[in-house]
Amino acid sequence: MKLFHTSDWHLGRMLYGRSLLPDQRHFLKEILLPAAEREKPLCVIIAGDVYDRQIAPPEAIRLFDETLNQLVELGCHVAVISGNHDGAGRMALLKSALKKSGVYFSTELEDAFSPILLEEEGQQVQLFLLPYFDPAAVRDYFQDDSLRGESACMKQLISQMSPLFLPDCLHVLVTHCFAAGSLTSDSESTVLVGGSGEIPPELFASFDYVALGHLHGPQRAGEKGRYSGSPLKYSIDEAGQKKSFVQLEAARGKITETLFPIEPLRDVRKISGLFQELMCQEASCEDYVELELLDKTPILLAAEQLRPYYPNLLAVTNNWAASSTGERSKRLKGQNELTIFRSFLDDVCGLTPDEEDITLFQELLREREASQK
Image (cartoon, rainbow, N blue to C red; front, side, top):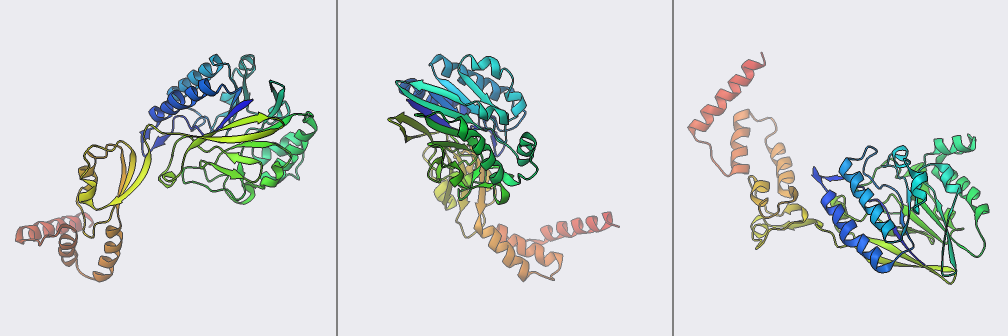
């Protein structure tokens, strides 16, 4: 029996003001769906954060609807939990009707106690679908005010799942949380990262596999847990990550994992170099890039000059600017405006102001002083 584990699609996400829907469509249409057609998984698990925000844009909803429809046509079951970015109430619409097509949405705590039983060629797998939760919701569900922090709440939830385990069956938990000791990325919500939000991976010991969502870097979480990671890079600090989704194979009473690498439509990269070197591109670079200039002198309008070679340029940084600004501030502390003006033109523009420049500057100073009276 094969299963796919993926998460954190964040459909509708923007990167520096650019819509990533074309890149997300490429992942779903050109990578995930062809893999599902080729490998024929019995179920595709989506461990939360299907959407990037609770009120998702219509284009993102349509893309998800198309993907679900095609997975069902391929004969796949689909198991989805709501993440902290998803609107759980909106995702719950039609979930009873969709269940008849083998599409299971878990959006409330009580859904976790109705496990999905998958059967194929004599192998059985129980899926426990636990959506994103906050401690207040768990306290209310169990009517227990002593439950404080995600760790205590997760322990209580798992204690209620364990009696539901079927014998001679593999047990898989799908949940959306921050497992202690895991590595974070800049693109993740900081609300659940750190402190009382950390859940010890040891709590997952009773399961054969825990399909995790929330953190965007693919990684293991203890012995039983794994983050599939997001299919795309959603921040510059993810540039070095190798994105993937997980194929699980359940056979002879155990689960094995295979990572399927994802080749994006456009990569996210950070490139360092001298300005003239970066301008020597034979063809334009379509990736999303942040450029770090290593020049020791300023480059005026660097982004505008580089953009034809990097049409998806996200930002340009220059370490010279930060260091030189600090040094210039110390040197010019207490100097008059004209001295500061001369220094700026010399340091930044490489120019020496002539008499006309100085006259114009002094006129502007007088206008500013008059406007402040």
